[in-house]
Length: 180
Image (cartoon, rainbow, N blue to C red):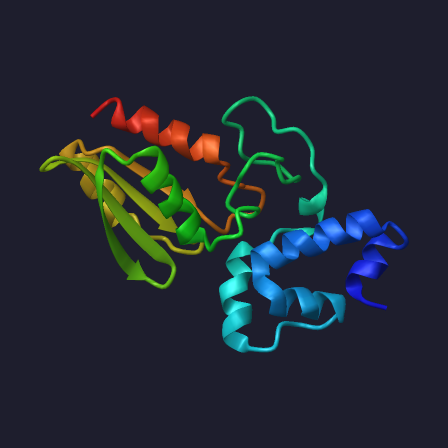
């Protein structure tokens, strides 16, 4: 008996929905592994997927809280980092491109756990966004931006219960850019 059968029993509709979500998040190999109750085959695949893995409550869809609320023990029904089907950086980059096309964005991959995005309006820097693991303790960029008066945002992509819903990310970005 596979993992999904154990979780959902005879509820084939719920099991199929979970398979669809797993397929979107982890790809076919991880979906098949979940069905067979085993881990994905490659170590690299496991390491890549760990940042996108929701907890066991993530498949219980409930209405999102008040607009912009993007945290809690249950995955909101709204588009978010974990149900988008993308890696953490692809999810944010898609928002940047579709919701803020008027800005030129430069990306710097600081290291495997951190990406920095600088937004420009013409030649003027208007916002710096840092996507990082909660285990990263870098403060230098934030302090530099604060000292120069440049708006700065930080999003943790692996903090349990922080979903980074699309509306939350867009609202925070709009709030910062409007002040620049």
